[in-house]
Every structure is written in structure tokens, then in C-alpha cells.
Figure 1 (cartoon, rainbow, N blue to C red):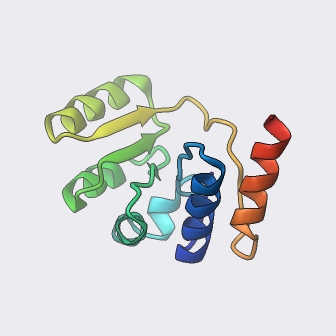
Figure 2: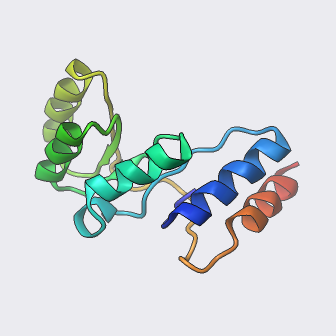
Length: 126
């Protein structure tokens, strides 16, 4: 689930816990470029759940995320560059997900009720 702010992240995690299911929180596509890796890391730290931080196709942002201590990073650049970045990430105990295209995610808008959307998606899947 793509989250934009602290309240959404907390609500999504609470709803998933209430329903007894796992959930992955990630930033919006390319969010490291406009929100900043520091903000995204702090968001995950605050809720106690690492976000998958989307750096788009920017290798420099991946490096900044690694320097900031981010341990789950998405990259959509070339496969060759992605492999080199993934090797560096692994040496630091991080995981780099190389995505040719972003996977299907629940894309919340900043004003959306994350808990209600999580409950609806999970209830609809059962």
C-alpha cells in the first residue's frame, strides 16, 4: 500500500493487524525525489515498519537512501545498473528491488482513509 504520511501509515498498519494480515508499505513512485529519503525513512521509523522507498530510475537517490540507512529500496532504472546497486545494497544489509514497472499497489491519496481502504481490500479478497 502506498502511503503519504504518518496518519495513513499508522491506520494501514492498525487495520492490517486487526485483520491478522501482513501488509507492505511503500512510498509513491519516485517519492524519494520529491519527499526526500530522510522523510521517508523517518516515516517508517516512526511507525516501526520499514517502507519500501521508491527511488524511480535515479541511482543517486538509491545511494542517498543507502547512506541514510534505508534498508528497503525500489529502483526502476536499467537492469544492469540495478544489479550493481543491488550488490552494493546487499553489502550494507539492505534490499534493492529492481522493478521494470511498478507492481500493482493500492495508491492512496493524501486525504484517503487508509484503515477503511485496507479493510475493504482484505474483505473483498476473502
